[in-house]
Length: 349
Image (tube, one colour):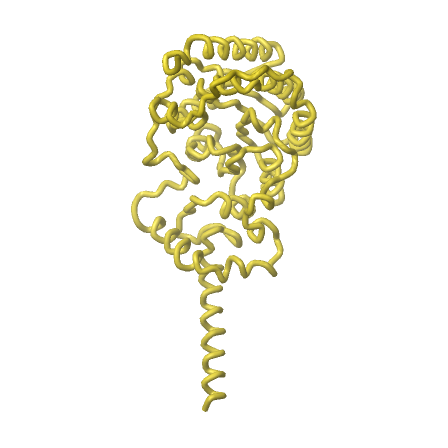
């Protein structure tokens, strides 16, 4: 009797585990095995868990690549404006090595017509080693080793939370697949919040030499140019987003401003040497960056600014060339001086 009970319990347990595995593999809320089933939407809200799977398994020929400031673009804008099918390759930190890691994944099985790549200033001086493993990302979703997939297919949170969440958003409400990883909904943007979150240094530090990050800069540019050279069929549209004047005030007070401008000049000159590269510059939009009601902190702007940047990019506005890039970046230097000497004084004495 006891032996039959044990056998029955064992069989029921095996069947239950098989059912759990089958449900996760079939619906696959992290898109580790396949794209959404017919009738289901691509519900993308967890980039660390879903980004690599979508890059491997979705149908697309264009990428929006960058940090968290790119999450509030609607993929559909780019689809319409550039006649392509777009998904996002996002890493919150936006470091070059991490983004190039995602590009490598995308290029495994896809030919890309466009890459819309946001360059964060910090990415040009970041470490050139990918940070996914060191920051605790679920590497069982990043590698292609099926032996460690038990972390995914036998995960209680996946079964009880992520899978029902995906199904609910597929059938209930008006979830827009183009708003993948969007965080702007229900967020407040305003000068009071942005200044409240800005820990302004009380003392201005000595300005660093402009070549302070030369070694890291060279390494990051090597990563970018390797991608460009390896994929001449892709048009790379690099762009610099409009960080708020708080960010420029901080760069000045920390002594990093001159190195930032130098890094950007070197990056633009290096990238423009390639025929399949275009570079666009939106950092010096004075009306936008000095209006702190557009921001929730030093960096993150409202979705209205995302749309503004997209429209300029689609219209080819503010494009840098080898003839004008130094003048534009010198203009950014002059604007940063204006910010710290006059504009910021509207909020700080």
